[in-house]
Length: 160
Image (cartoon, rainbow, N blue to C red):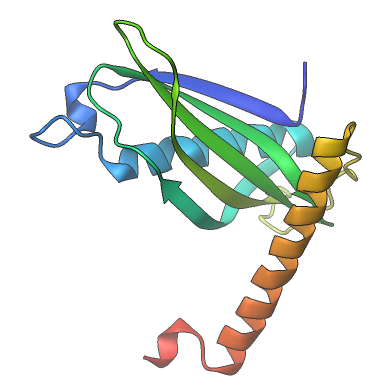
């Protein structure tokens, strides 16, 4: 079993969608968060919480009756945090090729029983693609740190 990945498959039903049969983005986001939690918790062997969700792209609509595959994989690991890339593909239940319908990057943090961040094992990508994703993830994590520091200096979101 690959402990740096997780996959969830769901059939989209009418309660997941609006009047026109389009699945709500919030339903997709909920599953993205769920699969990121599974991938991160498996990897860290610890409880994990969502620190941020960024770069969510809804590429195509998802409809009632679609079977949707949420595939999450660890792309970067810091001291206590992990970046999980979640790819979302959909296919009609009646058949047809899978379509890429969305993707997101989710930052998860491993926490101890008191809710404090706890160290996670180092990550060693096994192939060239994994090493490229790791380096890209390292750059994104650095950008997130810089953005948080800038926001904190400017008074954060509560300054409005």
